[in-house]
Length: 321
Image (tube, rainbow, N blue to C red; front, side, top):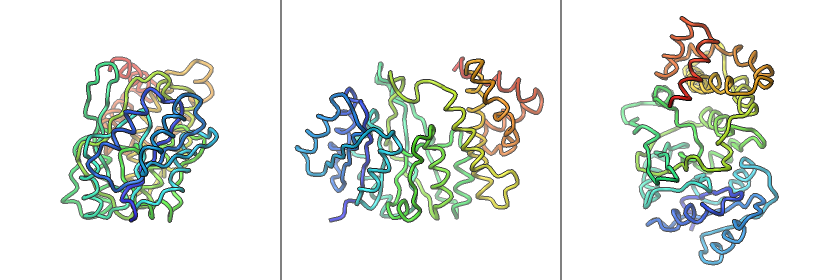
């Protein structure tokens, strides 16, 4: 029988969190899935943990490969998958108990290329959770453009690859693989996925828990390469005078990322800022696509104070949060 889900977990030196991640899948009340553990050249005990799970449960498949980064590991898992739907799960995160059965029902009912799922922040020290994504409600929306417009109006665009379910045929037919070596790979990949999709929908079941403030996490620090990656993504996908509603929605999404770019740019060292600042300010026009309430506010401030002062205010805001 074809598995309903191929759940792909890229793994690199996360021995302290890996068991909680894998167990959150294996303890589900839904069993029709394959769990693909992609060991991306780990040098810690993660290798042994993966092999032990494969010995204990026939649904677990382990791939050992040389280190190639998160994108490469996800791509490897996707190519080896055989399920109807692909779900990505990071190895330091975990999923809500018995959520897969509810998501499976939505997949059957909607048969959408992309189904948005609900995420939470999980704080390791206190084990408290904080709702990250708003409840979605697309029931009254007629088509993809209306749904995209609605999603970009949310306080935070849910852009992570991990809080989605994707039809496997859709991924493979459109060759939707992550760009190897790119920082912020989820953003660039999700833009391509949204452009290629014909149907999108949602499930508000509590599902994904992002572990916060983990030492060694690749998202723990801001570096010049993060800023450069966002600049390149905006260069690649932003359209200055879009000729359709879908491209306007993509610009709305990128405008949200641009305000993060503005704030992060001023967190760089003086030498790093000199290298990237001109490119950052060149794309200030994207702020006119302000369907998102945060972008709308930032754009109003920019019109009054100018882009440089706006960037400083954003940096102060991030420090005070």
